[in-house]
Length: 235
Image (tube, rainbow, N blue to C red; front, side, top):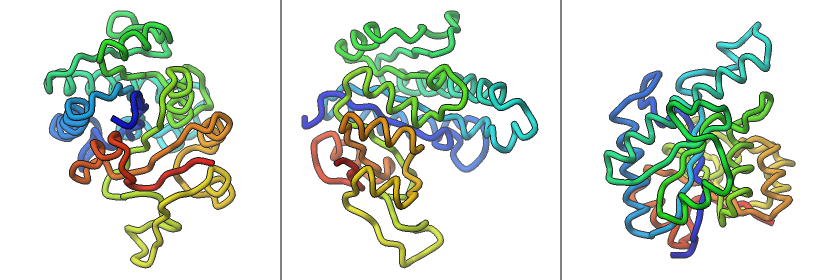
């Protein structure tokens, strides 16, 4: 295996399928991709999942106190983490959910050393609750947790978009895909890869980011094996 430990960032929309909320079928399809990659490569995998399928603070929280809206979003990520945990365990994986907000009845509190031990034992660790602080995105949570656990790579999973483009390829047939970008190019071009704070965190520690289509057959396995898939972002 090329990468010993990775942090996989998943959008909440992956769990919704073509609708809103949590689709068991869509969540199981995602779990199968992760389970297959884990079985074939043996890489240690941690996951951060967003909440866009359940809560969009900018839209549903319009008119609310920003911190309150963000806390609702954090709780939604924990719901998604539990749903993903159930699907992964149905695929035979051993998992743990750790949350930045303490909900001990359903998940462990985030403890870095405990997370590391779980990964070393081959468990998939799902981080819920974002960073535990309002005003920070789950992209930033992904970068932060990746650095804390010593991940070799941040994987930004996309659905039917196989990398970073200069414009939306679903609306512009002439969109150009980048094979490689620097962190500064992402920031200066305003490319919608991940939150700028998250990109900056990765840049400061030279933590590589790969943006790829997780539902492209075998893509996750190939990335973990060191093949060039999607768009690589690093210095």
